[in-house]
Amino acid sequence: MKVTRFTNLLMLGLALSFAVAGCKKKPTDLTRLPGARAGHVGDIEPTQPINPDNGLNGMNGVNGNTIPMNDTPGHVGWAENADQFKANTVHFAYDSSVVQTLDKLKVAAVADYLKGNSTAAVKIEGHCDERGTEEYNRSLGERRALAVRETLVALGIDPNRVDTISYGEDRPADPGHDESAWKQNRRGEFILLTPPQ
Amino acid sequence: MKSKAFIIISLLTGSLFRFALPALAQPTEFEINKTITPGNMPPIWVSMSGFTGEAEEVLKFDLYVQGFNFTNSDNAQYLIAGSNNGNLQGRVTDKFNKNALVAKAYSGASLRRQAHAFVDEFVQALGRKGIAQTKIAFKADTGRNSEIFVSDFDGHNAAPVTQDNTIVAAPTWVPGQLAVYYTSYKLGNPNIFYHNLSSGQRQAFSKYSGLNTAAAVSPDGKKVTMILSKSGSPDVYVCDADGGNLKRLTATREDESSPCWSPDGQWICFATKVGERRALCKVSVNGGPAIRIPTSGVLNPTEPEWSPDGKWIAFTAQMGSFEICVVPATGGTVTELVAGEDASWAPNSRTVVFTRRAGGRRVLSLLDVPTKQYKDVSRNSGSNSNNSQPSWAK
Image 1 (cartoon, rainbow over the protein chains, first blue to last red):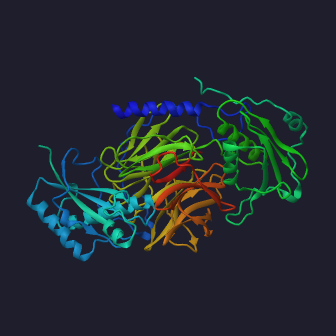
Image 2: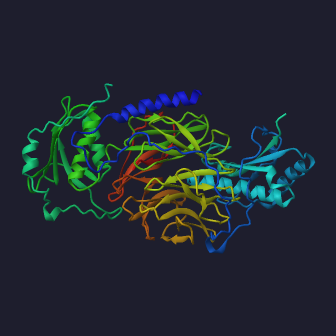
Image 3: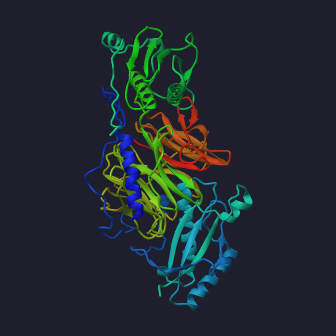
């Protein structure tokens, strides 16, 4: 793997630069950055099913009405088509993940397509403007994509046919820094997924 | 192995003073107050003489971002004098009792490193933790994509950790180890990776359907908290360092973000919405009700970060622009510090590294919380890149 070799080299360089020790009388309070740790972290699989109601209460009693995903990501290796639903991109109000009334027609058109093409699936990309903090936006973008997914499900689409991905503020549609750019950037885009041939 | 150099201390005149000194007595009228009050403390005045060029720059930067400021010897509390002809030697004298706090000469490594070591010894003589030889990790734009970099705390010696050619974000250190977690879209989905910087090896740590992001490692290194959306909404989870015992800690429809640990490892603080308003909350690592942390006086708090001494939570308020704020860890009156976002505490519980938007770009800056003094770090990772999401190694 090219990447691995590259990172190995980099890390060698890093490790060397870290190897430069401090003074002989070792300061006692310094942050130490020692070498490799013994253990390894494996890919995680849930050891037990997550039960959302297992004593895990939401704030102010707000619970659920969310639609869980498959534990394993679906549609790996499916072909992506970003053009099919270009005209169906939905937009959001500032700091909101509510699908607006007029935009529901666009979502309905996607639902109709999926109903007519039973092997197809869709991925919803959630995006934000730059006015939130970065990780907040990554969560908000996911919340937006999930809100669109919930709209599709309400229209009769199987949730397992709908993937979501959040790009937060990292992939603006308009790189500008004003309201007209931000308006374009608060959005949900549909990517058509078709099974591998 | 030329870099395996050691700084040898030649105890010059310093030895005399060092051994003659009773336990670094401070004049009572200028006692160093270790209880910090955010935002309204005066700097500690020092004078500096004899240093030149890079050594002088390093010393000034290191001291400024730890709450010192510079004046003439008449008005200074501490007199710093020395030289850097090849190697650095320096002495700090307390002007009021004439005691030498530090008197050292250094050799080996780089002049930068010698200057950092000298500053560390000075602040340690004042009973504080030295931070001048610590590391930070951060996200750097490479155009449409971003990668993770690691550098010295002052931005020097930056080196890339990833080369994924996609979005890589949200780096966080494993306490006490040369290892980080971060979020990479490398596999087509935001997944969390564990990356050992010593061996260069990394592994996908969390790759559930939907969002996997914002990992934070517990102070004892045994648990990881993060945001997953596999339930159908972004929620706070915690699991063991090997990925086992995954437990969902929040079950709201809202978009939780940026979980962080209390230093005792008992609480996880995060950002969410309560009744349509953004708020900071904390939840026991064992589960249970989420408890609001009041942040009166500001709006839209996100990106909480608990200070290592447990006393404060730094966070970002958004009220048109971003403000770095601190609030007592139990909640209460907020102190607004400077414009910026995403603060990460240094091990000394007084300096933070944060992101500043300047001239249309994002730059990293170091802020001394008690004095509100801040200075941008050097930008070695590409002059046009945006740097953000800093994490200070602890």
